[in-house]
Image (tube, rainbow, N blue to C red):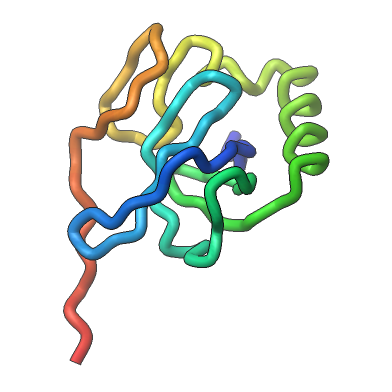
Length: 108
C-alpha cells in the first residue's frame, strides 16, 4: 500500500540545487525532497511519500494521521527504522543519509 506519512521538518538545506530537509518521523530521521513544498518552515509538518514532501499540514492533522496509521499497523517501516524511499538503506537506528542524488533539469 502506498502511504503518505506525516513528519516534522527539523532542518532545511539545498543540495545540488534541490531544496531538501531532514524530517523527524517519531524519532526516525529521513532525508526528504522539499521541492513540492518550497515555503515549508522548520517545525512544520509535511506528508511524505517515497521521499518527497507533498503537502504541508498542521500538527493536529499530523498527529491524527500518525495515530491512524499506527492503529492500522502501517508504520512498520518506521518502527524497524527502514527508509520510506526505495534507496536501499535499511537500519534499526535513526539515520540521516542517502545513497543516491537527485538532479534538477536545466531550465532555459
